[in-house]
Image (cartoon, rainbow, N blue to C red; front, side, top):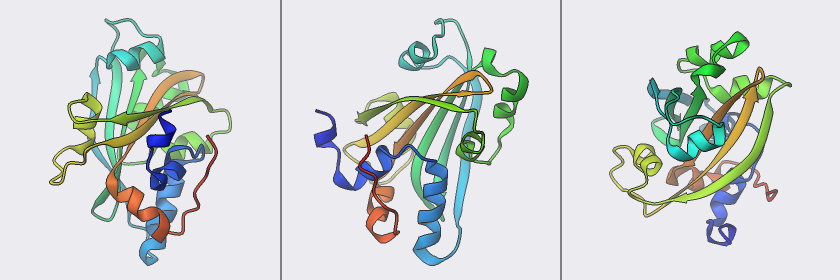
Length: 186
């Protein structure tokens, strides 16, 4: 039911289970032959996750997580807002590296590790007033009526983390021009 409301230009981005980082890098390069892809860290702090995030991660209401919010950009155009939630109890062993990514893309690290497991993907239509919508659009001058996103529970080094990816209007316009193939897999 939700799928039929999803704009056609977004389907290839939303339902692709490969590395979003890699696809964005390819699309950015295809625009003008330069790799102008970058990760802009908006915030990284210890905080309580949103109720739906806590539920997926099996956390108690009093538990804290490391919450990292970034923009994935091509040049100065923001294509994706990403929010990663890592329970503090997950930041041990190899997974401690998750706390020190800086402006390096999380996706590159996750998809380079063959032991990483990705759970079922959830798709959502976000509207003004939704907490994640408000974070995603930030200070955009032309606020869209809706944005689409997905989230997946990953297990890295045996530890859970939740990755939310919100696709902003510019990425939908990029698809036909950028030579990025659309995936119809759900």
